[in-house]
Length: 90
Image (cartoon, rainbow, N blue to C red):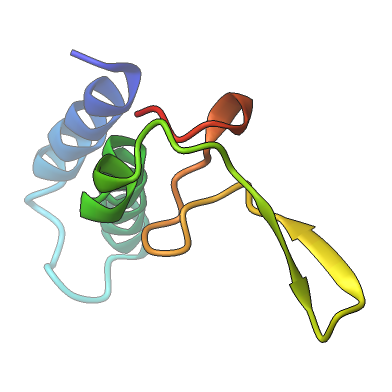
């Protein structure tokens, strides 16, 4: 189990411990739901997407906009996964 999965499990357990609190209007419960959603999104991003997997191993390249600026791609333009070491390995 990854660190993110452990954190999700911790916050889910803490959320269930507050079942006595009203479902709506509980600021603490809303915060825990927000944390769980953010952690799930981060876990999904770290896994990458079909685009990341399809182009795995292709070196990152810069590209020019308006013929003046060179931009080096560091993140997947589809899911936001960071491309480490300037290659597209998952």
